[in-house]
Amino acid sequence: MTLPSVDTVKIATIGLGYVGLPLALRLSDCFQVTGFDVDLARLAELQSGIDRTGECSSQALAASRLELTSDPERIAGFDIYIVTVPTPVAASKEPDLRAVMSACAIVGQAMAKGAVVVFESTVYPGVTESLCGPALEKASGLVCGTDFYLGYSPERINPGDKVHTIDKITKVVAGQTAAVSELLVAVYGRLTNGNVFLAKDIKTAEAAKVIENAQRDVNIAFINEVAMIFNQMGIQTQDVLETAATKWNFLNFKPGLVGGHCIGVDPYYLAYAATQLGHNPEVILAGRKINDDMAGFLARQIDRQIQNLSCISKPTRVLALGLTFKENVPDLRNSKAADFIMSLQKMDHQVDIHDPLADAGEARALYGFDLLTGLDDAVAYDSVIAVVPHAPYLSFDSDRLRKILKPGGLVADMKGIWRHITMPAGYVRWEL
Ligand SMILES: NC(=O)c1ccc[n+]([C@@H]2O[C@H](COP(=O)([O-])OP(=O)(O)OC[C@H]3O[C@@H](n4cnc5c(N)ncnc54)[C@H](O)[C@@H]3O)[C@@H](O)[C@H]2O)c1
Image (cartoon, rainbow, N blue to C red; front, side):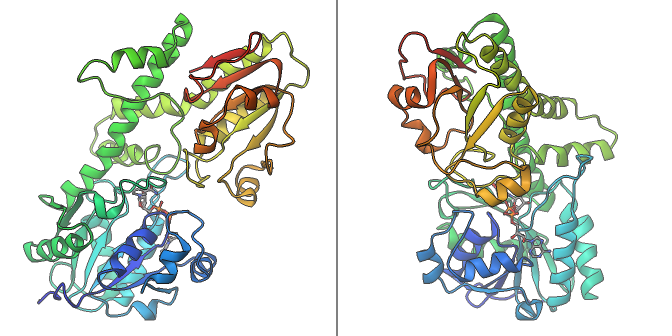
């Protein structure tokens, strides 16, 4: 089967979320691209020039040649399909591959002989060839490896990060055959000025992605565990890290909440695959457990500090700054900040929540929280807690904190963003 030429390929991207939209836009600089999504509201938003993920500007959307559709017929007979749909975990923490399977059904019906289907969604090793290949065969009636081909290219972008964008990071690719690999190196090379790494095979590329995130998770879990120990010892973890970081090979990870749908999820994919093979993934799961327990641990520490305040009133009023799963993104899904706030509420604290990036309707729908619309009316809290280090919170000074705190209140700094601030005597400080 002859593969298409890089100069004439028509590409369809399947899934236009945090990963798919920036990818589709970048691809459309170089190729004829149609972005497909099943979410009509998302498509309508993008058609009106709004990307609620904050990854792509209205100007970039308006200037691009990217076609958008929810109609499978408009992606029929394309040369390359790139799948960027979500890969969450079920309540059991097992991989939930329903979106990937549904994408395979859609692509399988749309594609013709000679197509290449590339998966960018994060999966465990083997999913592309053992599950997606057969699902595509079933939907298309074609034979994988003869009539159509598979590829895998893990997505490494980091939402909110305007430095490590698609065009500036090494893109890993793998193809089912040497010719497919060659085509993918050429296609992705156009996006990255040739900065492409050809992995040995599809399984290797899948495995590389999943360990990139599992490794971060385990490293953060180690720092979270030592933070718990130092907390008992009355030692400031941030001071310890600053000191240890003076050694050339000390790894610079920070303690804190690990939420979202990558670092807190992908290790479960690897753990599931390991378990299927009869291997108990002890380190991976221990890391997950520690990181998942962090929200409760932090709530207990801050509760204890609040109970010891001399200015305490009942019910205590607390201001939580930040609700999204990490800093400088609007993404509220699987936010451990939400778990932390719910733990404080269960301890009878009245918690007001502010987040400059989160969508108020989504916060209500996902967690039942009403967000403050601003901080101007926020006064006299027993405690102000920096939960998510969004950029606007970094510029707070002691005047700003005094305006929203009771005299003698608690400044709780989960990420050490206010370490440089000196508060007047009487205020209590806590940091992880
Ligand atoms: N967000 C990240 O930071 C990040 C980074 C690297 C890799 N990844 C991986 O990339 C993948 C996508 O993640 P995301 O954050 O972009 O997800 P997302 O939820 O932001 O977007 C996924 C999009 O896919 C659409 N979709 C779902 N099912 C579909 C289907 N059957 N057909 C067409 N569209 C469908 C959804 O409507 C949504 O718009 C996941 O596997 C994730 O693990 C994410």
